[in-house]
Length: 318
Image 1 (cartoon, rainbow, N blue to C red):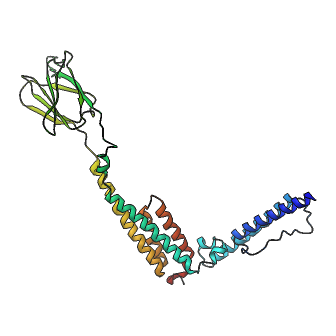
Image 2 (tube, one colour):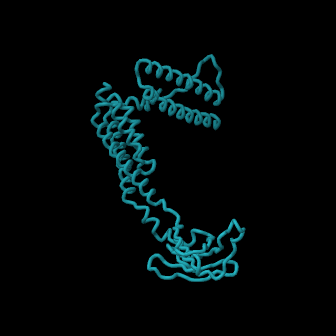
Image 3 (spheres, helix red, strand yellow):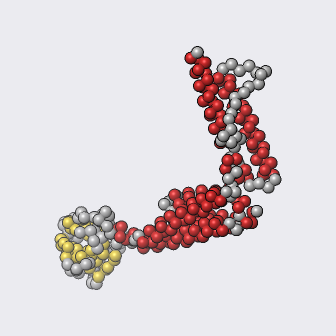
């Protein structure tokens, strides 16, 4: 008795699964019942045999549905629409489907407009100057001073001792540190703030060397003293790409806002329901609004799919 009851429970579960798959495939309506009947000339004794037979029937039903879809396409139907389940195709003429498509497109475009506004209002310079990116630790400036090479006499390139080295802040023009080169021609100034500095290298009878730098950017300086008078000035600070980053961010923000505005226009065009292809093209441009990276375009894409389903509601498609 228990085996019969278990078999009945399995058969009931199988009937439920089969009905759900047939409803999903558009073969049956939601309220239809499924009877697991079998041919009299084929002996079926086990549950696995019944499942296999039902799967074969479902396979034949799918093949029939594909053939019907092919006939619909040959009669002028939209290939993307005829593949949809019958439950969806039967609702293509309902107004709420069109209203839902319009709502998804407009909401996705508005999210894109908000993202574009945030990009325009955000300044990368504020982020770079924040405490998150500021360096509070001190740096060192060190290097090597050599004499000028004389290729004719094959002399020079020697370390010079006693060269005066001074580091001066550009803001405030006061000395940050001062030292002299040792017997090996080397110098080091420690505890230097990480801001623009002027390094001045001077010695009687030689051209004064001035190098504008940011401490910590250059690991080691090698400078050559040349006999004579005057000043040799060079800016060693590395160029900043911040201006380019600001321009790129602004350009992306403008494109995002324009795309979002076009997407909103596409939503209203869909609500008017006049020209189908024009509406889809306008909504497609709205996909570039990048609202929430992908969330906004996803909503617009879902709205465009619903527009495809309600294609027959447009005036030029009737």
